[in-house]
Length: 182
Image 1 (tube, rainbow, N blue to C red):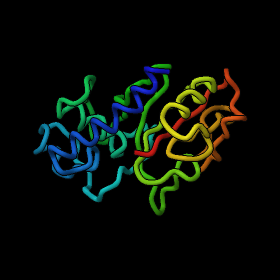
Image 2: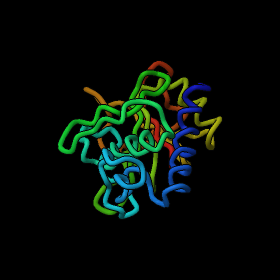
Image 3: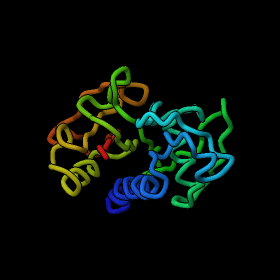
Image 4: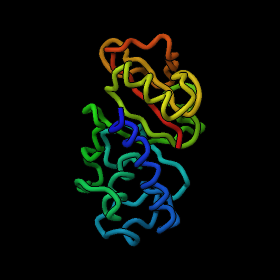
């Protein structure tokens, strides 16, 4: 649980460090190719991270977020993206699931109902760890607050707009997607 907590704590720190240095949201930075490296794919500068947190498209700002952090020297790992290509640079969490980031806004509903603004999501986290994470980092109820969890649907991840699962309903061995507002 400590490693998962660290995953959730590190990303906001990296986001704020990038904003402090470049005055722009990583992934959304319309001058990333000037600010961090000529190979960076620029965002549109509208103040939100467009695209799904678990995107497969390199053109989504949710993917460019990781590239911008890496090219700025804030995060280790591959920064290789090609416009029109596939996004394969999202980091894995301590449980081996995918980590990603996105923004809820008009026209792009929250992945877990009730999430607002920019939030980090991480999948494949067992219920026993979700319970501990929420108690450590939020209010202890995985259905409310800034950290929420959604159960996997049959066949995979929950659908966008999924209802958060209350802590009392978590199944210890079942996987969940956990999102934290930043």
